[in-house]
Length: 307
Ligand code: NCD
Image (cartoon, rainbow, N blue to C red; front, side, top):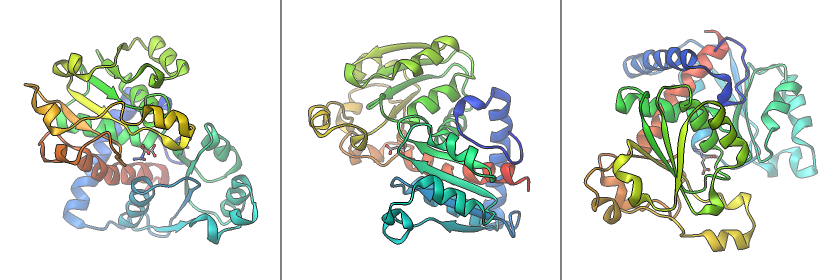
């Protein structure tokens, strides 16, 4: 990881990148906890351009930049921009890039959009989600959460449950984990929601062990982490959604039947797949995970800005 880099795919990071990055994040965390707001990014500007809805990713990047002492400009919702007049996202980015932001964070519904944005823009571009493709900064915060909670990532067994076909957090997370030793992945989903071939191919190349199951109960006792995702309604047609709605879910009652409950993670937002009664379990770390997003994004901005 280096000053001025674009962050487009989780595949661009090696094990040593990730481990060095975690130490930067830990240091930032310590400093924020004692000093509150830092002054590292004074005079620098972050531009956030979200062409798809977002709460955590957009706001944690904005908070991260402000806590580093920098400024934030947000594109705002469609109604108040020329998008409403039919301007392309490419033209919008080209224009704002000419105002010289120091970093651009972009989210868009089209797979591959972030890579294109990075070609258009002079400023470093961070992919905050490009369609079903990838969400590399979510993967960094997910891996950081696992590393912090379990004391390391080598040897970890992870169950990935839900919409593994269209959730972009899934490829990015497994690409990140694949840098570590002795990783086992269980894909827990209806057959229609298994990961796409191109994703499995990367796991094959990287020698990650994986298995498919429909049934969480079969594998739960082997898991260190259960990572759940919502059905990506916006990426499928209405019929497909109605057919698959409710096809997987976890609740306190269901988890309590098992002797050993793994860490429960979720990128959020949740819908019906994760009952709110699970929140009371000490293993439920999804809000902690979201909070880690702040420190992880501060660390990333610090490196990209070279401050
Ligand atoms: C995820 C996303 O946008 O891909 N949200 C997030 O960034 N935490 C997950 C989702 O929307 O399901």
